[in-house]
Amino acid sequence: MLARTLISVIDDDEDVRVSITSLLESLGFTIEAFPSAVDFLNSETIRHTQCLIADVHMPHMTGLELCRHLRQSDHPIPTILITAYPDDGVRSRALDQGVICYLPKPIEQDRLLGCIHSALKRAKQDREPS
Image 1 (tube, one colour):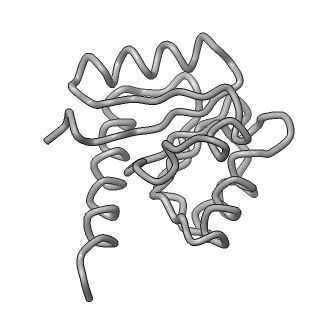
Image 2: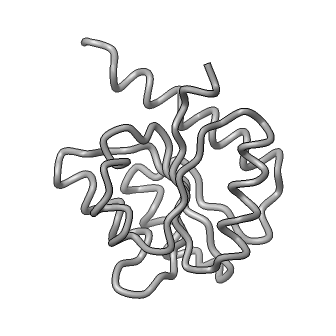
């Protein structure tokens, strides 16, 4: 099941992208990583992503703006936002907009995995007919 589960990671910090990608691949997930929200939006990966992990603070389009864009463009993807600069106001807005989790960096592995499982559960529910 995990090998067919596509998680996309978007972070402008290459070290963070590589770290999260390596961790999740070691756990059996299929990962696509992008340095920006724009690169992700211009890829075919968007249609197959079941969980999105995105940095909050990125140039050109923030993680929160990306979530809003995906919802408005009929590509809602269960999303986990990560940040090196936690902000309670941003966290509250993100969760109000349906973000699964808002995690501070450095990311605790167990918390990240719990959030991924919640996101994948939501993705499965979203795919099931009502």
